[in-house]
View (cartoon, rainbow, N blue to C red):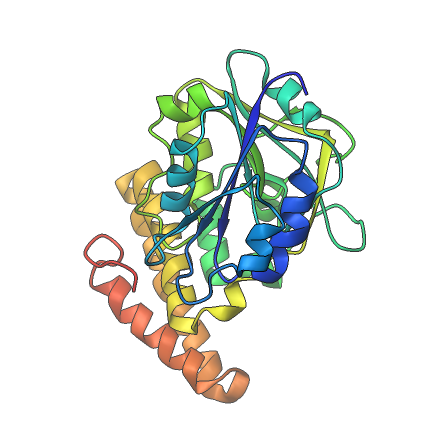
Length: 308
């Protein structure tokens, strides 16, 4: 490996996934930190003993992914930092990512993410920056109902050739190498995105605005399961976090008029989803969660409220 790399893994209810993840990092990084955001389910002593070269940081509460990353980065010193989700397992070395980041004005690079069956995670491992239309289509459910629409094709880079290295707007945060100097230049991740969602999109946007390019390379790959912690969140927490991140991103990076259009789309989408649940297409718990979030957004969430 040509340059030292520090790996930062933020974990939450991830004990089953951490052993293969950390085993795949052995010998490929100079430093490794696991930031444990789940005080009620700490990594057991046997798991920690199996990886004595890893530094473990146990938080007394769930500080959120962005805060966990910043905490892990501050505990390391290597010039390149690998953000790796605990449900990712490296299939290659990291030289490909380091080489992609070597040019001075490249702030970071993502690699090839594959499903457990080996197929590329197209539409996830690299995307364009979301436009107001893209976020409105997401909020209204149009991208799920009509995935081939032109807005979604551009957003999810449906024409990306996974075998070809290229410049992209936002490599997936699940497997992202960052130049420490670039990360420091933009102040790290925005900890207001909590507990998760859109903090990596916001980081890539700020890196781009600061003059840094981002790359995708197939020369480094990882197997990614995805969503291992999401199912353990209550519907209310999950919805508040995802919609809160979407609205915070829109408010930060769009004009006031565009932000208002996205907010209207969110309100309409929430109302439609609640109506679908009430009509028998979903659970009463989901219907209640959509209804509560609708009222929060109408009252100014997330600007005036913190996501529970």
